[in-house]
Image 1: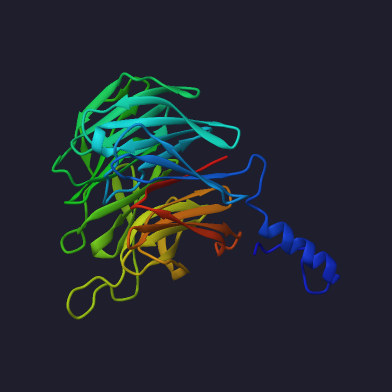
Image 2: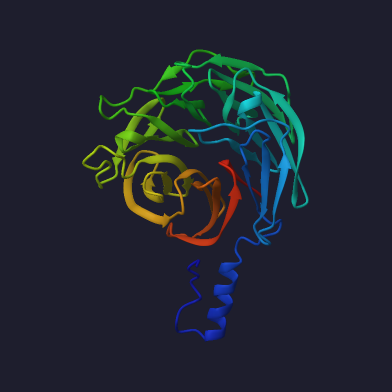
Length: 351
């Protein structure tokens, strides 16, 4: 539970119980948080989970799923959300109405979308071969793209895009972390690669999270987290545990990222757990190999306020979405975990 200063063992038991009850219901805010993820099937739907009642409603996106090996398949900006429809080359925009999410727009993309991000007055869409921007205006996204850039490699290995103060940045798993300028008129200009460490420390860039002028990135199969400032890696952190077994199979890898204050949480898909790093705008340090265990391999995660949501692939066609409460010390207390049919993709929290 949350650590509350007044809930010390020396105060009356009834007050301690009240503090514990308040902590356990921290996610039952007003408005009630809604957890969202995409079912990712041939007929894609947005699964909308009420954090207070745990009721799940499936809302069709009007497109086809099929994304994999990605993060950011769902993005949230205030009361609206964007969801990739990989199989139909479009993105659905949803708006919150009460405790429901209602589809409001279907936006065509130049290539099959894998990841979306809001920021700097735009929705940015990473496709298999293109990066596009669409201007936002309140709860509306302009359907016509105001910028498009071909990807540096464009071999179908695109993984994730984020927006930060410096523009947009994306990863391609075959070997690139790339920055692109994003201004009032959308993405434009040249791709600029971030210089990665020498082999074998450049194997498989995956997950990104941006904040302010900084971007934190995983180099998953090299077992590294990187801090990128002004287009350059300024700090690296390595998990201290062996990352492969005697046969070369992965025991753990930092895959996808999210931030909570000075704590960076990464999903360790092979290890079926979440790990934690300590970060600043100049350094990154490995902190704790396991802050939570999961039922399957985690594929995406997000933090809003003091809530962390993560999805994992589960098994036998069933996936899991789990909500944690975060303490000020960066510890995770599980609020609940639900099963959803299908290989769910992307995760967001709408307040």
